[in-house]
Image (cartoon, rainbow, N blue to C red; front, side):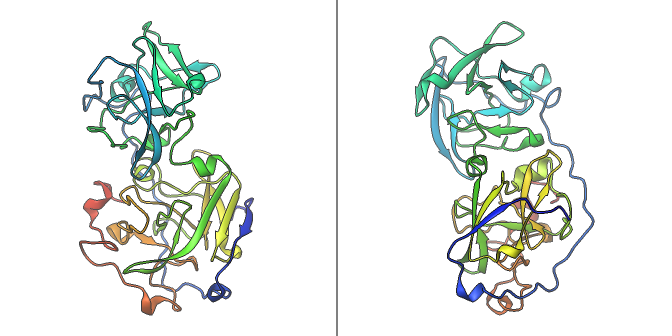
Length: 327
């Protein structure tokens, strides 16, 4: 097991969690390789019309469900950055089929801003001579599969595409980029004890991961639907035993938080605090309890926890809720 390098700050741990019971009946499985995602350099097809409805170039900060504050264009379409680009110096590495799947946001005259520091906005000349807008040095793109304002279906694609925030960083990872993640013990109506992140979003474990494994079995399309909880080193815990905290290295080199040996994730279809739409998806995704257990397997709380229903409502989900993925 990878030695934990996370510094822990435990805030106001609940007295009832001072002694945590062991999990029972939590499945383990050999890691599996997720199918490759669409998009990326040299991949993807033009599957939608992501071109702006007007010729004006404008950057706007907006709230997008499941991602948080992101950059959007003048039509409310989410803007993305590509990890294979560079910011210093600014350079795009997305051409050909890649640019069909990820149309670059081109500059048309002066770029207007709303909620964005104008000094962070720039332009980079592409190979065809057009000028692409940058923020914080990172070139910006739309995603062809986003069909309406507020969509962010490109988040996490190929482990390289992320919605951009107002500084050109990765939206949805602001806390991790700042070096602080906060995990709290909470109760979810109809389910019971659970762990939530600093945004109040429910956390899950994946039974195709192996408890105390050295890496995650959820990559590619899987991590787009189930974003891993990442940390650059500091995690604050509230109501969770610090002995349960750990970390693993993901395939892309990022550090993922583990609780009780299980890598933890959020669910892209949870739109607000208290949602638990990922509970029971495909019989492999489950809310994780503060004891580091799959919900319902901790003897201390099983009597008050609700097992996932076969369909409908919070605390239940069918395989279709996973966006068509078999994760």
